[in-house]
Length: 300
Length: 326
Image (cartoon, rainbow over all chains, first blue to last red; front, side):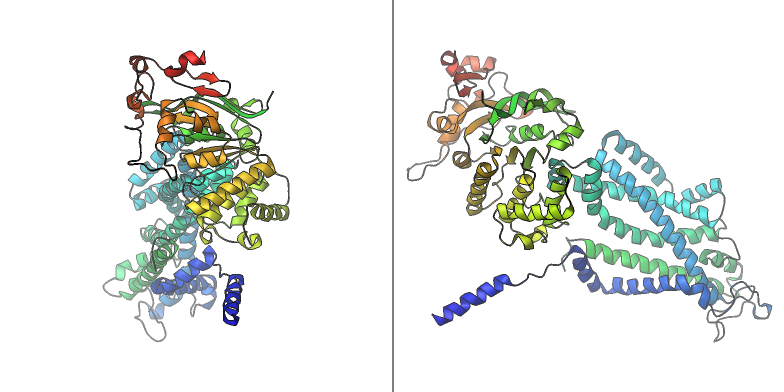
């Protein structure tokens, strides 16, 4: 009798125990930490961000001052990544250039994502002619190869980093619009959206409070992956002289500057190239990891 | 004169597609009194759910349109109401609960927030007051530890619990009419009984009228005061629940009742109505039930019977009772 009483008490105590509730955010963090590669990429990206902020203040050498005694010298203890045709320290210039590439990548993709999300939500939710017009315009934009479209836009607006941002943003819009539209269609047909409508919520509320959060995970994943390609495009545009102009330490412009000495001094192009490569790679790896962590269908 | 909360007169809801017009609801009439529970019974595809969506005017995302008839709610014809007026009615005066409690709650928001949303949309109150009201409603629908459940996510609750939450949400603004579209179909039998019991109790406590859509005659017998039987988009019979069960007139209603089991009665084989509901593109010309009807006459294939009053509270759409109806 005594025994059953304690069992009963134990059970009642168990009922009273707090259940551990994981919010979607903590659930995401728990899954994300398990993605080793993405997690390392995330750390590297944090480091790149720090570099972008403090880079210009910590460069070992002045980034614009020529040093004609040390022209095109290879990597050494003094100049870790060697010097360029004007004798400027390449390592310092790469550090200082981080800011530019990151800023261009982030702003252009952000603008593209905002534009694309608004258009995608409208197309998906309202359907009909709104959908048809938006998606046809996107189809037209998508028919151009990205870089060609960017070159075209810059041809109209004129060269310069600001215009590179606009160009990259414009060709990011249709891709985001497509992704957001398809997830909008998916979320719109769920019963909980129908239920929200049945309690008398207005369309704007349904779109922003119920549909938008449902599309957010695909936006985040694509946003991250897109940063890499935006940095690459911006560098390419600078490489062909349409973006940042020398003596700016933009990575693409640096590649362009080292092009003539490729056989004589490969380090002039190698190191800025490596910087672009690593940055794009870590953003893509992070994007992959985010996708896996945000997708509830992928089992651990 | 009895006050009717809702009166539906000859409702026609049609779906327009490239293949042609589908008359999903084609001539449905009924009315609901205050505090009354009206059941709509019928097979899949008979137009029950479309009727409920028409009343809520939630057909917007479908190619469906109300093509005719009236939906009179407290003296106002909802068919002509503007979308902004409908938004004030939805959730506030006419609320709805759905068949699938597992998917009718947004998985990313806490329970409390979703109930509060309904309250904040229709009442002027602070977030704090809305939260208190949400907890109050959760208590009213029989959820234990409501102060914990408000902060739970939908995935932490069972189907029965979620349906209670949906009911709490629907009832939070004191609606006059609750439309329940197969509210217990997706639940276990034991939970079904609890949910029905809860809905019954709420109609008494809140004096809410219920429009209960179901294909389960057991649920009808348990819950409803009156019953409308639908077949192929039409109302074929309407009466109080006792008359329907004791003295069904329409051959379809008779068939439906014959195909249920009675406890303790020995049967060799369960009866069924031969055939299927006609597909919309191949509707018979006359009575829509003629192909499956044991009493079908030559006339039934040529013309459609009208929906006549057989007695004061008993309507039938069938030629067999034409004489008596007059």
